[in-house]
Length: 178
Figure (tube, rainbow, N blue to C red):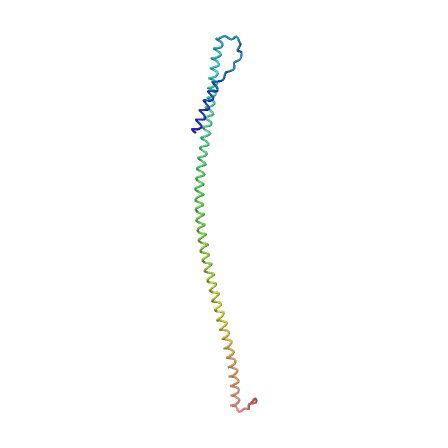
């Protein structure tokens, strides 16, 4: 606002200097005018110059007042915008902080999920190994069962044949084959 006042004072001085240096135009001045009419003309000219200067100063002061009011309005708008910007900045900073917190929680959740997946992979791998071992034991047990069953069938057949043979000898029968 000080710069505006300095500019207004400089402009006022320039108008005063310019207005004082101008010669007013008067109509009806003749070449044979007397000294009295020249003095009257000079006096009228001075009054006209001062009146013109006062009018210019008045207009200049009105313009300075209008400019000062405009500057005050602009300053008020700037302060209002500054307050709005600061409020939005605070809101934005709060939102960014909340977002960073959420990202941290997501990072922790992803890390927990990765550990859980690794544990699950370990458990599945362990279960797969156990199932392979169990499959091997089942295969061995199945082979043992088959062998036992085969031995049992052979033993049964031998027992049946031995019983048949012993029952023929005890009944007094003849042995056809031998």
